[in-house]
Every structure is written in C-alpha cells, then in structure tokens.
Image 1 (cartoon, rainbow, N blue to C red):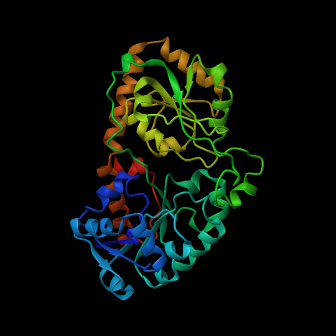
Image 2 (image 1 turned 120 degrees about the horizontal axis):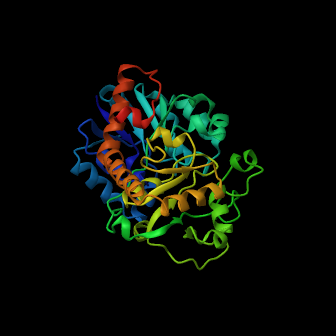
Image 3 (image 1 turned 135 degrees about the vertical axis):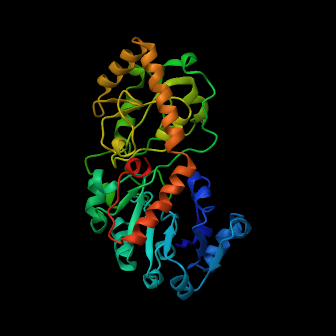
Length: 373
C-alpha cells in the first residue's frame, strides 16, 4: 500500500496536530501530491517561510513530490488530505482529484466554519471522497453535520487531537488545588468579531443559540458563584486585555478541569492536553466520550448534561470523599491518555484505516477506542 498526502505544502496543522509529524514517517507514506501550483500559494509559502521547510520535510522522510495525476493513479493507492479546508476550496478540493481512482480521505476539520458547508459537501461528492476524518464521528452526534453532509453519514472516522510533548504532569496530584479550572476561548455564533465571515449555515441552523460553546458561557457568566468549586480561566469575550494563560501550568495547578463539547458535540483538544498533564476530566454525560474510551468514575468524572449543580456536587463529593478513589481516577486518566492518545497510536490508527479500505471500499467506520484496543 502506498499513501500520498495532498498539498502537504499548505499544511496548517503540522505543528498543531503532533500525530501528523509521526504519520509522515510511516513507511506506507511515500509521496506528496501537489495539485496546487498557483502563484498565490507560492507567495504564501515564501511569506510564511515554509517553502524550504516543505522540501526539507519531504527529503528527510523520503517523500517523492508528485505533480502528475497520471503518475499518482499509476503508483499510489491512497490520497489523504490534512489541510482541514483552511485554504480556498479550489485548492483544498480541486476537480482534478476526481481523476484519482484510489481511496480519498479528507480531514473535515471545522466543517461548520470558514466555508459554506453546502459547497464543501458538494465538492466532496464531486471528487468522490471515500470517507472523512473528523475530531470524532460527527455523523453520530451532530445534527448540523447530518443536515449538511448527508452523503457522509456512516463515513466519518474520529481522529483524536492527541497532545504535544509540552503537556506533561510535573506536579503531584495530592499537592494540587482542590478545585476545577474552566478553560477555552468563548465566541459568539456570529461573524461580528471576525475579519472575514467564519460561520455560514451554522448561524441560521442554530438560530436559538448565541454561543459556540454554550456550556462554557454558563461557566463564565456564573464564575463568581461557582468560584468555591471552579476557578475561571476562560478569557473575557468582551475584553481586549486578557492575559495569556499558561495551559500546562493551569492543568498542573488544579485537580480537575471542565470540558465543553460545543454545540457541535465534539471533544476538544483540552480533553487530551489536560489529562496528559495529570488533571482529571470533568465533562457532561455524552456518548462522544464512549467513542474515545473515557468512562465515568474510572478515568474521568461525568456529570448530568450541562448541569452546573450536578457538576459542583461531583467536585464536592470527590474532594471531601475518599482521596484514594480520586487519586486512582487521576492515575488511570493520565495512564490512559499516554497509552492511547500518543502520536504513534494515532498514526498507526490512520494507517490501519487505509488498510481497511484497501480490503473493502465500503468499510463502515468504527469508534477509535474499539479499533486501537
């Protein structure tokens, strides 16, 4: 099996998603197909000082650079795209890819932003994308995805964010503050705070929602009355003077951190970063956590869906209860994340998905934790 990466020179997630660094070192990944050779992209490469970096990465990993679609067809089996649709769609999803007869899988990224979901879906269909990667199996939990990407229901593989090396446990659990910390940016579901239109169909689809992270907004707006149990680390969305928070320190300072799945119902990067740093995940009861293997009272603590009272009750119960049980959950959580969400594990998972499609192009996606265990 030979895997090529599509337009890897435009890769924005190379640093943000550590598993991609590992993935390109796999022996099955042998080429980069460059369909975009526009002057605009060349200028962007030069401006971002990434032109030489691209060629160095290709050379270091013995990746051949392919410009000819006929050569791609003749010599390669799989084409993967990890650009997360952050470029123009004419670059991310060019009609030329329709001519590739192999397996074509694209990471859908923030499928609700940056471009019209209707147009992204149309282009994916036009070029014949085999399946999609996502932050989770979006088709199982997100009504927006099911509405606007109907052709890809039962065709989405959840790929965890994982964690970068800087997220480490350096403070013993027993010496951490007996509280949770709430983290993450807070944006309204509108385009008023962005230079360019960011949300398209999502604004009308969620016409009764004001915030992208609905539960996170609850944590922020009620931060004073929650202070006994939860330290608010959420930047003030109405201020331009927020101090940058050291995430690794924040996770190490507190016994727990509170996560929010957003109105699109996916596990954020902080799920993995926080647990890698030795803090215990506090999250709503939601099936997305089953997909990635987080189990209540084993390696995380779940509370009733977006219920602040149950959340504070859980914190109070564990802080004032059996410390050995709490310590064991912390141990389990950290060990679980390090074993199952490291870059090697996620990279091997991606290769395994490609192998499954080599055997059967109609293979139905499976939950991450079931595949890797």
